[in-house]
Length: 409
Image (cartoon, rainbow, N blue to C red):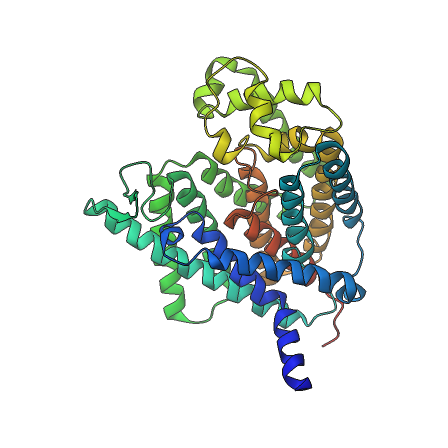
């Protein structure tokens, strides 16, 4: 009996299985799978499992967790937002959102440098293969739907490629981003794979995902491609002066971009109108923000306008603006400090690597950087469970665990 209980405990405490399940669940949120009868029960199973893992982490697993400098701003961010939820916002929905962040930061973002490095890489590769195969199937069906103008009806919802949907995805932007992420993962697997058949499959998949990404004209998805090139140039050139200038380029480009107010609305598909209203809310609530539950009403009430596309469903379409609006400017600075410190940590370790390992880890780093770039136009990094947030936190934790691994094999 003790052996059975131990096996159950070991299974529940296995974060790898949890990540795999939650990644699948997050993909059901934006695809046709969402309308499969009974599929939503997986959402509640994953949430309950996540809460159990948080409790296990607090009671036992924290002893195996090495504390890093980047943990400090993230920890303060969590404490501060919890206090804001309790004292300022006082709404149970905000507490639920905070719990989602807690699961993302503590369980999905797993850093275990004392675990066998080969095991970490193996688990990460399984997750990568799962996503790549899932996207191959989803994109293949979507391409067939486009080619033969096929429509699939589930309940009151119609999936079609030529409408608002992107084939089996609920919207075209989602499939474009998902395809771009799959391309980066295919590049990574291609480099680690020794199988000729697998490599042929990956080449076909890259072509397929490129067709899906370009066919949907996903501007956010293109940021991932740009991020791959940008990251490789940055990592492979170790000159500190070059890196400083190279860091300033995207900042200056964003600043220049924002000065063209006449064209910015069309280029951002109306997102800039959301940011204008959000700026008013931030100015009125600079320290505390308004809380996640009041975000939509606060932005709607900031000024008289009907030009707030996608607010109710997609938030402010810029996670950094959304953090400042929801939890205040200090929270945003803490989150940016976390991102800055952990990226510096990763770059320092990438500089020590050679040849194939450096290429592989740089590819995965570009995936993380790409998602950070995408969130200039999306709000999918925290506050919600999405396939984008899942991939970001899974791979960020894996990168740290691999690059700073202390396990002596």
